[in-house]
Length: 441
Ligand SMILES: Cc1cc2nc3c(=O)[nH]c(=O)nc-3n(C[C@H](O)[C@H](O)[C@H](O)COP(=O)(O)OP(=O)(O)OC[C@H]3O[C@@H](n4cnc5c(N)ncnc54)[C@H](O)[C@@H]3O)c2cc1C
Image 1 (cartoon, helix red, strand yellow):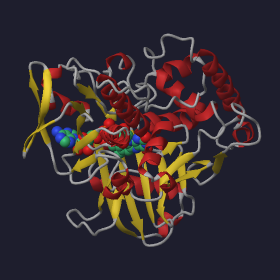
Image 2 (cartoon, rainbow, N blue to C red; image 1 turned 90 degrees about the vertical axis):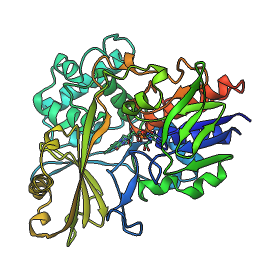
Image 3 (cartoon, rainbow, N blue to C red; image 1 turned 180 degrees about the vertical axis):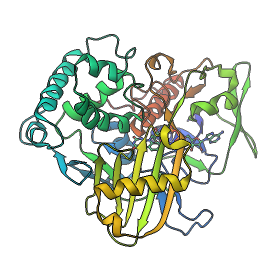
Image 4 (tube, rainbow, N blue to C red; image 1 turned 45 degrees about the horizontal axis):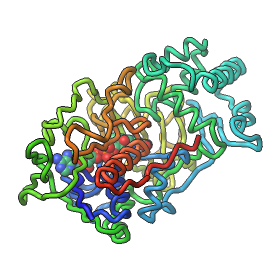
């Protein structure tokens, strides 16, 4: 069977490896870091101590509509490590809860009962949101300008009240797309609401791994997947070309030849890895995410997670019986220039407004992880710039959450891109195969 080099052991590269490995290809994955998972990974809380507690670089959540990510977990035999929650909890400062969960009505009406009961929104907000949802269903296949306007443009066009924007649309979308409403192409907002909220009644269920992310891709899961060899701590200097065709990849241990190559690295790395491909990434920009991990001396909440309204911190995830909690801020530009202590003070001050027990609790440990290059910024106009898997070199393919996967930069987007690159390799080798699962609707 043909051999394939995959550069990058993030979800895109690993998904391509799992697909091609199970189809009988001989696959070598080269990952520069000591562990797999790329941005969706974990590391020891004490740097350099491999036995220390593992923490995720940031809480990663998925929805049940992430068909390909779930398929990937199934291929690895770890799908049962994802715990699904059927309730979204919105918390106001002061602690009042609003819960969104499905009722007995079929999609797209399944949220009607809980939505109408949400105290954080006024009746006028709910009517406006309902109107906008109907418009979204009508317009999603008709409008041609959804990649040219921002989501905020569209919400203003639909006369959404400020509170509905802040407490509903913004709360859901900024964390889903990792971009502000006034910078995000409306197309992504449409996709999140259609696939995640409207198309199927269970699609919104939120999945959270019950193990550190890194354990989902640990060495033993690969033993069931054909000929896949993982090389950790194996940075690839560049793809080696000869007459426009790639012959191998240059590693510290020499050139590793293969029939096909997949570059599954972030956009900012592609230029040095394979300049011969001449992929223009100059218009891609990053959007940051900040995770604030705090270990208290006592439980501060018994909620599993909550969306936090009207403040800088947007989500709380209860990582260990209410004593270790993680706060997440997406599109966190306002925190980038702040020092560690300042970010922790801000998080604690805000957290105390939602969880009064924080006032009495002592902080035993705290960690701030600013991922400045968390995802590319999904601004209007970017869709047309995302490259396909195929490149000008007939045996080199691209994968990565920034490539044209049909989804925004998410774990599902990364896995989709990996499956698409794997399909392109299979087709180029004369052994066409389908790996990509269609969206749920
Ligand atoms: C803080 C944070 C929170 C997030 N939260 C969510 C979430 O809740 N839900 C969600 O769906 N998505 C989330 N995302 C997005 C998600 O993590 C990414 O979209 C996805 O993991 C990207 O996967 P990838 O394989 O495309 O890229 P990466 O994960 O970046 O993988 C690329 C890999 O290539 C390796 N590499 C680079 N250059 C080389 C080289 N020369 N040689 C060898 N290896 C190389 C890197 O080390 C890396 O492991 C979050 C991202 C961040 C940063």
